[in-house]
Image (cartoon, rainbow over all chains, first blue to last red; front, top):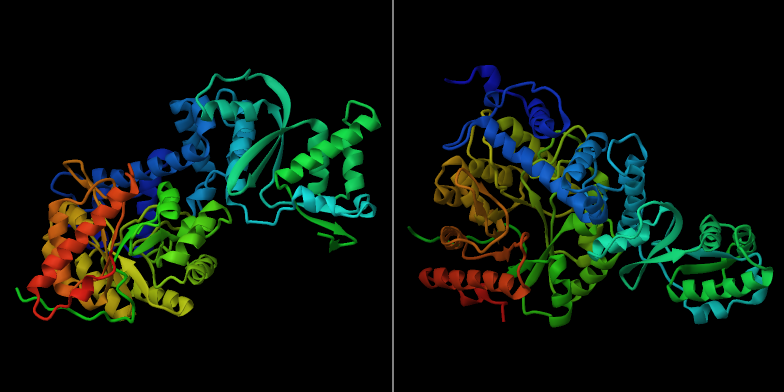
Length: 279
Length: 296
């Protein structure tokens, strides 16, 4: 049977829209606008539809695997079937519009905050937040990191009103589950910690080209969070003090310990006073 | 058959025998500094990162030539060209002093979407005019010739009016661009679409071929997938030899992207290409041994 002239001359824009639609349709739903035989030739072994399905299978496998690579703990907790359904639902809502696959999954935590139907949705959302922060920290632009010795050179008069800019890679998370410990257990094939609700705080950052995670207390998270939002050191410490369970003297001792630790981990990029870098 | 080696249309170097730089080999390449002639990177993997990949790349680029090979230019898409993407591509090329930039004759999506695949075009006058115009725009923007690769494909469109090799030859001539001849892709598509792969190789103007790709594939019986997951089969090597007979040899790269083995295995595979080229050049009167130099 020879094709009609209309079939032969499917214009390029229409052909591309049709072919793309056929590739995503098995995963996103919808009706075929044209049967595959209208636009595609059969091969020795495969019908036009079977040939199009090769692309459709590869499309889903490629994007599924990219998300699984970025979210191994989410995939493990969800299980293969539920994770596959999650990926389909996510791609329907957030199809890739960027040239890089690396950012395909960046909206998954927010997507899991929405009305998606999957067991342990809130837990998965928190775990996804940690894994997303790891991807972002991995790709973040390089920024300078002040050492503890450099921090020690800052004049005491600067500290109260000074501002500390944090490194580009640092991500601060406040979570409703033990998501950091769960990510570690999943990635290391170890027994899972309790999956129930528990308030936790985590810093995700890059040091010497490797991504690290540090458990924080609530006051630590509050101090770093304030600095991240551009507050002065004095304001940040005041924010941290609101949730600190101890005396001002104990808080002061803790703050010294925290800052040494954070500086050792390279979390501070620049210290500024009156809008100018001190270091 | 009379071999007729053709000089490359563009003033680009013969880099020798290279390997696709992959994350699993970063440590080996930095530590062992293997005697490979050059590396090719997937451009998009380095365009938006300030992390370890870029740190590694900067070090590798100090020691080896780096060619940029993209997968998202989407030259055949009816969507507008992405000039933000091209700016980043240009910046990366300058950073590593890439001798050339390549991508694929394909489209990746339409209506703003990216399916992250190398989707086939219909080989029609309409597609040709569309691609010629866009290649010219890209070359004007980058200020250098673009090098386009023949993709593996699994469908043929009824609206095609010419063969893929005729399309590529005309595109290269009319847009004045270079070609990356992926010999494995020729074999894969010849199986999937039942054409003679030697006719394809013979139909590609050798003076336009900047470099060759070699890879392994997966035969599913009813079709072959371009999986880059294995050693190249003998039929692919024969096609490579024929291509070298016509060109006299060009830069050659081996790609391995699934089940990636130790670096030495991938490197050994591209060194087979050197031996194949030497064999071909022995048969060509006047061919110079220095054409296969570089690899230690």
